Length: 457
Image (cartoon, rainbow, N blue to C red; front, side, top):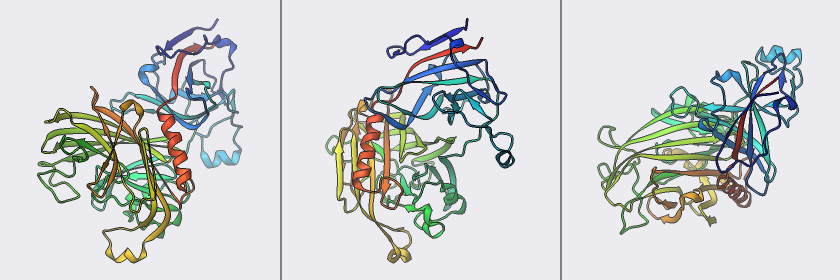
């Protein structure tokens, strides 16, 4: 009889008791025939299907998993057909790490991401499809094997870009960067590809990459002193509820888009936390922010996802010392110049317009601006944070949400973008449908039901 040990999440255990392990079919790959696995059951709580959906399982939810090296963990979807034995030609091209013939399922791309950089992975992450209300089984097979290449579909990197530190994170259709360190630039690609490494390694002008490779696309939003494609701040003034304080605009050094010296003004640090095949993560930290009405420090975890046109940010204020006890968090995006498509819903705002894409720092190229029919950007704040919409007229006009601080001084937001030159979300209607679908999914994430350690007879 097989040995079965189970860890259950309280309140959401929805599965029946798992079948005995020796009654299940076990995965093999070439000579790899593992004798131990963790059965993971997850559930889609929505009454509709979801495609290419992020699944995140924390380490503390997988206490049954043995203490093994990451190369001794293989995530398998048993519902997928196994890969055939590769041809001799493919072996010669790919080398010894190429996947061998699989039975009883197929391994899928996944990551074990160490978010706090302590040498222990914190999250198991992968992408999967689900039917409406589906309860789906995956397996973590335990046993060392070093076969299985996977091309990256996301990228994160930090470049010396025009002589200052700039972090980038991207998926195939849309990418993001922090030229201003706090407010996000958005760049769109004309076909799905990764190219930000070319931008920062070759120091290419984001507005001119189309002259290098037309498919690379272009920056599709002017940020300047706005929130751009996404930025945060605090609402501090009870007499001016639509005024936001921001860390790169401090009373000590007003009138510039950048901060002054880092000893006496706000300063920033960046780390690549993951550069994986299906999720890439940048950590951006703000220190020494004195707004004149409070002192703050914060950390943002920006993530890009394979096959998606959104990125997420998890915000944690590690110092939150406002003079006004009613101070609230702010998250915003720039209102597009000439905005002719707009949507506002519960925790969702979308702005779009035809766009004249130009680099304001290069006067000589103004006559060569790229005019596109549509650029859209969106901001989503999950409903559990009770976001309240506020239009911020300063800083060129911005759509924002006010968020009441919780005890942990944390919140999350999602940003998304689409443009008429891209491969997806080319019209206001397509982009709105995409954003509302993403918002619904982030408000009802895939749930872990159970994790069970099984030994093969």
